[in-house]
Length: 425
Ligand SMILES: CC(C)[C@H](C(=O)O)[C@@H](O)C(=O)O
Ligand code: SF4
Image 1 (tube, rainbow, N blue to C red):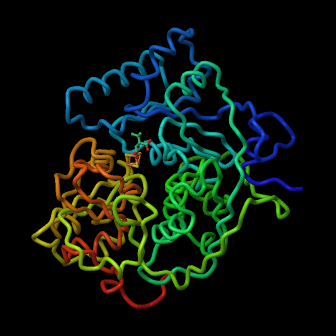
Image 2 (cartoon, protein in one colour):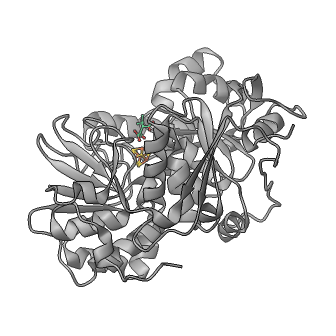
Image 3 (tube, protein in one colour):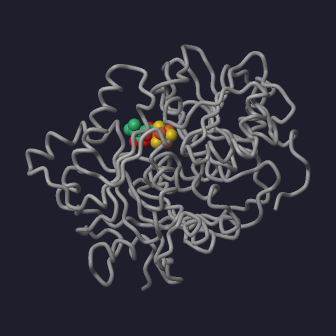
């Protein structure tokens, strides 16, 4: 019997020739990632009591993103603690004000196919878009990882999600993953891997693939994997990663707990309605709903291609007078590239407010929170009650195109009316 990608990565990490889903294995971690909010200020007490020596500072990456720039004194204190901790420990990889951790670790080449990456954030699974087994762990668990570089994991079963066909114009990987989550349910993949495959997935760019792996956890999954290929290799080479990559793949005779088939060619834009990510409907079912704010950003959909799509839709148009349009590029690198391409000018001229990269508005942490009764159309990954501020607010999730079209009309809008009719390449 062959092995799945998850089984292969965890076999290597546990130093065994093979492992099977359901087994509990002791694994060596390639990258331990923490962010400011669930990082050093929470782990430090226990870490020091147990010896306070890092297993390998080259494998520990800390990113300050949730509290940047701080909006409260407590956030400023957390940020200072995190910065001082990284300096005292002489960490070579500490990033601050660069953007959400998941995007930052991808851009800096920490994520590579076949690696085992554990982070103190649920969307750590995004790294699976490059073929790494990546998952979130609690801060207490992280103390053990920081001290020993090891932990235990149960090898997950894998749900294979096959998307064949070709995405039509105006339909994107966000729509594809929302539809997938609707079918699986918000807890339907609990402690399982979702492996995305099929011709529609192979055709996706690096930016689009990361949307899928990012949102795997919204179906409860341990991680979301995509078989690495030349798209991944080209991306990593562009980031200066020149080593030979472990182009891991599931064997043809690997055992999957179930396989779901979808056809991308007849997919419409999808919207997740309050207050669950699996409460998904075609945009036609919610068109016309008035919003107060649109948010284009986050580690889910704040990348360059997302900003390009929004600029294509908003160029020469104006954001509705009734709403605020908040744009937050997912990293400084993306911000600079968007600036060079004139995208930030187009968006600003249309009436968007372009903020600096951070988790701020996405999780209701710093700038951009919503008040009672306010409605948001967001390109992010979660719409739980209170997610972006007031528990009496409402968050709808959609693609960057849906967000941009909604910005123009001030009501939830099908983006296809703002795009040329032809099938995109
Ligand atoms: C703050 C943290 C608990 C959280 C996560 O783990 O995902 C955040 O990044 C989010 O997206 O909700
Ligand atoms: S989902 Fe939002 S809050 Fe969580 S890491 Fe991504 S940008 Fe930050």
